[in-house]
Image (cartoon, rainbow, N blue to C red; front, side, top):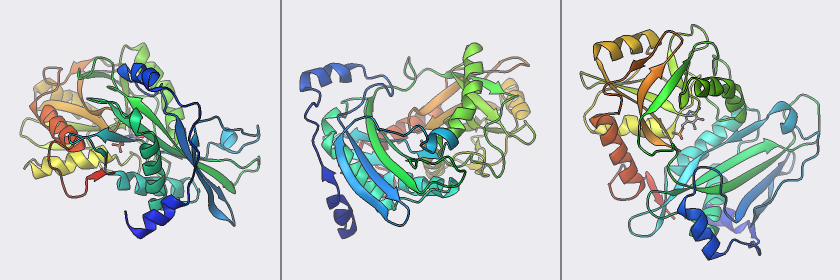
Length: 366
Ligand SMILES: *Cc1c(COP(=O)(O)O)cnc(C)c1O
């Protein structure tokens, strides 16, 4: 920690949860945590008031917020979030994967949503405080502690303008594998009617509103027996963008990897950036360029497309098997991933777990 971090961290008032879950109960919960349904004993909150700045830094028992019915976020959805993980690494210490990137992206999301940017060192200090106080909740083995920093407009006011008050909060949830059934390939539904984000919109910001808009398409995917939805661009309904919460990659027979470019309508995933970096380090060619759904179908059918995968913090790297759309289905490769997907997953998870050396600064040990 540098001096700045120490200053920020020391600002937190810490109140231990007197009704914390017992070690025995915790062991039972950690045995099969699932995703996002179990929470730790504590939370971090920091408040913002226009004219006063950030204040009331607190680490305390996890508890509900008391919100006025006219609380701005309930009406105009001024809300952003992050998703990151803390791991128990090989030597027994605790590590996080590129958390500074989450801090930076959180500030960028805030700017787009006309919210005050939380200083990045304050974001880091908040996350570290929570991981430290709830360290016993980090599962052993394959699991990890999923951290959910978020911020919302807390002002009681129905006028339409950026709010003058906000609450920043971090909660934590121990998680196992994201998709039930572990590593098996996912089946995707191509949404040709609903879109996720348009140029000039909020597609590159990690905000709850993007998810609200994607849920009907996700429900449509479920109705068609698919695990996830994949969105096309809003202007032409032609170019592949991303899943509801994951970026996509295509592995071609010539060894090239293609992924849609960051054009303002897709979320700049940290896993996406890590995959691009690692693939290039391993000598592969990665092209960030538009890829159409028609081309995807043609390449899968001809065999030019060998593998496809989705990636994000929650599920890391997941092979894409069958793709369904109103014009019929097709399968990528053998429908079960392949050596490039497997290799990248092994490298990335190895770096995250401290068993493989990654680029300088990717693994932050607490
Ligand atoms: C969070 C998110 C991702 C993945 O980002 P990571 O930083 O890799 O976790 C991709 N798409 C959307 C829409 C997201 O919200």
